[in-house]
Image (cartoon, rainbow, N blue to C red; front, side, top):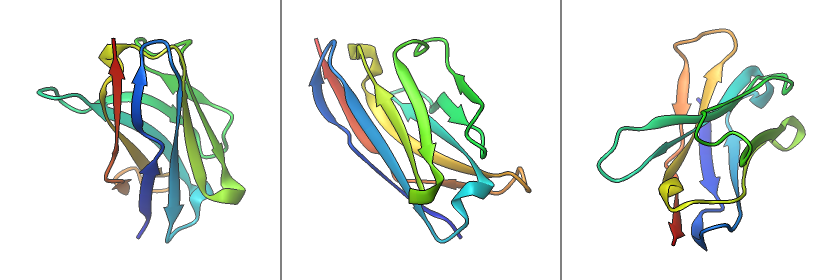
Length: 119
C-alpha cells in the first residue's frame, strides 16, 4: 500500500511560481509512474502531467505546456511539479497519483494540496 502526501500549495499572484511536492511511502517508488491531476470548483478532476517510472518520459496537458514541469527523485521517493507563469485558471486542488508499472489497475492518490492564483 502506497501513501502519497502532497505539499507546497498556497496563494500566489498571477505570473508567480510554486513548486509542489509529492512524497511517497509504503512502496518502491521507482516502480510507479507518477501523475499530477487537478480539480477546480465545480469541475471534474483532470490530468495535468505525468512522468514515467524511469523518469525520462513526461507528458503534459496542453493547457500547462511550457509553464509546468514534472520531475522525480527516486532516491527521495518524491515527485515535483514546478509551476511557473501561473494563471487564475490554474486555481484548483492538485492531486498526486501513483500508478504501478506492473499492474495498470493499481492506483494510489494523495489528499491534494490547494493552489490559488489571484488576478
